[in-house]
Image 1 (cartoon, helix red, strand yellow):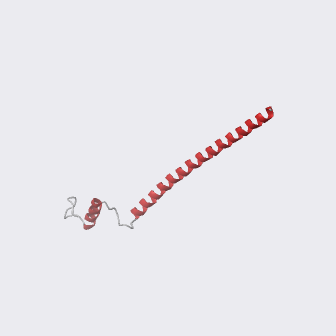
Image 2 (cartoon, one colour):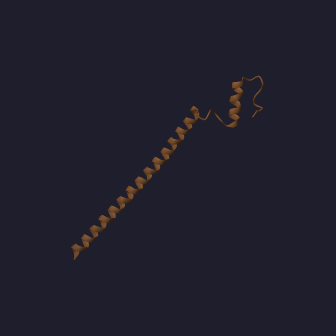
Image 3 (cartoon, helix red, strand yellow):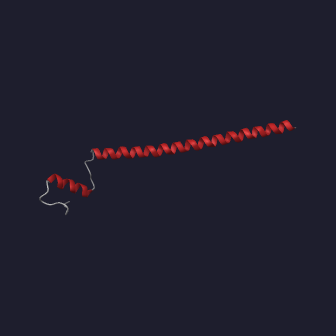
Length: 85
């Protein structure tokens, strides 16, 4: 697809790079840039996943601690009731 950004005086390599840029392709499918993008996206997904797991772990730990304290409070209250009788 020719563009108005190139002239006949430009080198063929430059024309090819300009046309690839206009089409939206930076490099070939197996190129270094594509691999870098994949690595970056995988790192970002991993960070989001790790944050979600950490949040879920902290929430679950707090819930277990709250349940344990409620259970011990109930045990103390029942022990207190039994000792008053």
